[in-house]
Image 1 (tube, rainbow, N blue to C red):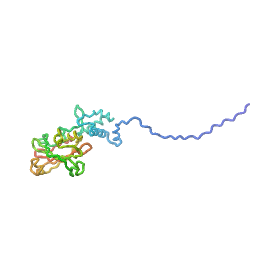
Image 2: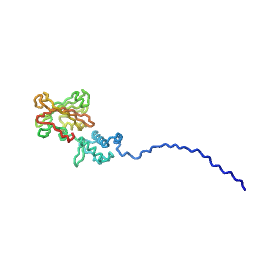
Image 3: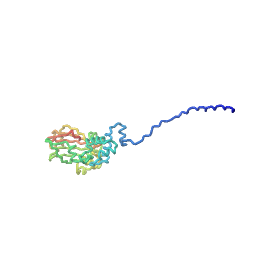
Image 4: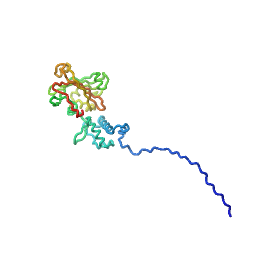
Length: 282
């Protein structure tokens, strides 16, 4: 009988290996649903329609959308910015309220262009006491280069003594002098402006700024007070010296509230008055 072989020893147990695994954050897949330029607003917690409005305003201020040009339809803008149509509509509503855009029924939405009709509707607030508003005739009194005084410098955000164009006009309605204007603009803003160009403009002053210099007035702010006519103003407005007149100080601004023009007007209110419809943004 053969001898019994000793039983084989089980293999020695090897110490268990510790596997060290590094957790790796999975790579992002797919693209953001937002337009890249809108992502900044999402990070800053800015309402989405405000960011859409910002991009649309930049398209106007940069000249990508020209005055009088129809802008893309709301659905097309929604696709472009990767947002809902309602978001675009809210942005457009604000730009229309600010007179940067104009909606025309059946035609679309256009970039606002300055013209006589818009001037009379949005920026000219003087009318007869019977309620009739008439187009004034403008007579240039003087056009010269000057140094900004303290008031002009503050309104135009320039240094005291900086070169400016100081322009004086007399506005007449039905042959009667009604408004004596002093207009001041920084020479750096409109460096090539000439008296001939200003005097022979085919449209409004704001239209000249917009078409010749790419400077668009989008809003104005006015301060009113009663004052007395100086000797010069009284002579121009055909009033007695120290007769009561209305003084209007208007600051005209472009995008981002950049100053464009400062205007001081003295108004003969014997038969005319100031009227502003607050239901309409100006």
